Length: 311
Image: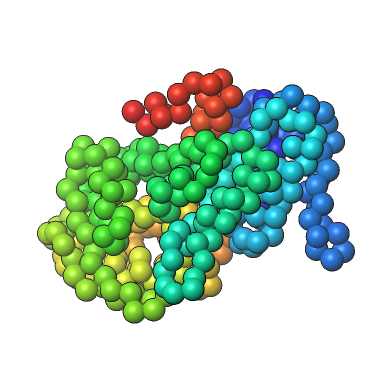
């Protein structure tokens, strides 16, 4: 087994390699003067089971090209099996035609990864479960709930917990977390989105008065929806609101928006390399998913069960 990393999240790659007690593959992923990506592998990978770690986060297109070229380099170097480990799968929100004459970019990216030569894909909390079906190769979708549930129980034990989905589409994810928290009750934020990036909270489905509310979602981008939901929950009588989000995209002024919000804390994973602003925020905490990904990689290499990680 070998672990190779692109440039999108080297600290996470290093933590996974340390967990597995396997050194990162010696390789160069650099740019020519015109910003073309060039990859050179400096050790033999012939016949090896290679895992390429690369989140396709900002800058999404550059990181995607790095991933594709790494896969191509490994294929041409005769690696036995290539697994694309994509903790954050970019373009996942474009998983259907949202209007006339619009693309399904998630399917296009799946095709690109497959055609580049990947034999398998490993990701974390895909925006929509059906994205696994966009790939014609085996795809494992890991869940961040076990890591989050352990942190919630450590931080909010004894509180009157209620798990809250920020929209109707996230109910399945919220229910899975609630089940891990001793079948905590569930609430839903009913919102209406007038245009992309903006939302208006309309109603809270469920009685949140006197409760410690845990908002759960897969992505926080601009932060508007989450901050509006936190304010609505506090207005409905919640004692405090914390948010647990798998992927902290946090674009634009999202960090400042979170700092000024009603949130007690925003907890994200390190699937995306945190910015300096994110690390400096007193309201944002980062959980590592390196042990989760490392154990999944070990089980794939050993041909053992990955799904049993979540039993």
